[in-house]
Amino acid sequence: MLADDDQIEVTLCGGSGDLLRRLALGQMDLGLASGLGVCPPAVEYSREFQARAAEELMLLPAGSVIMDMLGDYAVMREQARACAAVKS
Image (tube, rainbow, N blue to C red):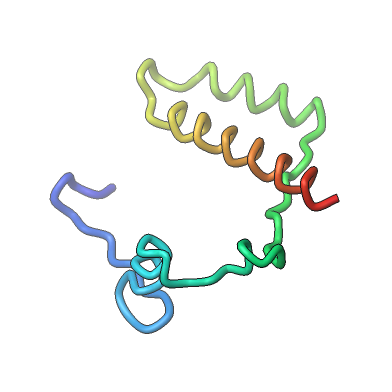
């Protein structure tokens, strides 16, 4: 587990955090403006799998940060679905 003062170094495309920095500064063309972008897939889960996940979520301690992360994931899944709807 990382302590609060630990740092994670991301090394992608030419140095520490270079890809993330270039994306943040708008210096990379991902093809989205030209309509050539690719929509990420939204994985479909079976009802059984979803039920198991719900049971496991109930076992998490109150205030678990995993719940916040899952909320972010839900937003990304919705964005992927919206992207796919626009592309089709």
